[in-house]
Length: 338
Image: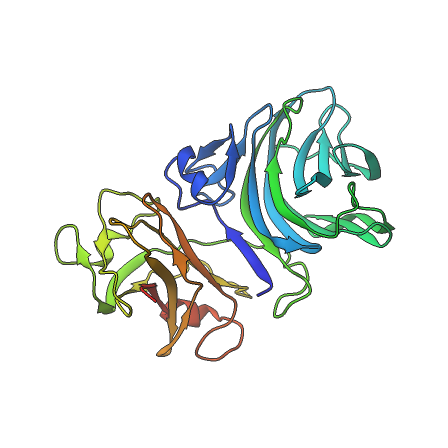
């Protein structure tokens, strides 16, 4: 799959919940500061960042909404970091004192390119194309649909690595001090279909269960409506559904409708929070159903503590083509024991 990560930061109830998805260092979180409302991840000062681990890769496109709040007039802070097992391979930094945006190899080890930029107080849409190479590396940056850096044929690997496995947002090191918010983050592999290039200004809209579909094999913690146990915008452990650890046990829901009418729907991510309540192996997988055709996400081992279970579906299972607005509104989603 080309899209390997999506997060609108809407499902987290607190800072601690970010640990289900990321490695977190001293960050903050808001359930209402997002670009179009909803959640936003915040890097609030020295060394605050989140790390997203991915499978080893040598090239990505990544995009996100970025809002600058404040920063030190001295030095510069990282906005985006690409990291291998050896350390920081490349990064994008902003210097508030002189209003410049710069791409670097390593942790400020070698400048790849610099451009003047004054972000103001609004959200901006930033997209970056990074290819790791000692001789034909790429570091392209687009802001609000305009390319501002076009670095090609460069050395973009600090440690001579052939791949990286972490993409991070925020202030990576203790000497950096910038307060900002992030929203609507995607990461994609441009070397696999169907999405192989930057997506352009996009938002991640969060839908919650609105009705019971079938099957509904679980047991609600209260009442008889299954969807009402899992329909919070920010997840909560107050209500739950319990499935037996038996292959084929499934919970399926009708979802709320999109509030917008998008020209393109790049992907649907089905996301849930689950835990196992007894010893032994227990797996769960996300499910998406369209027109009676089911697609299953990866089988995810559950832990004795809440963690994310998700699947990314880039095409409509019923048509094998790009999702449409009506297709998303008619789909069913949920989870099952593989």
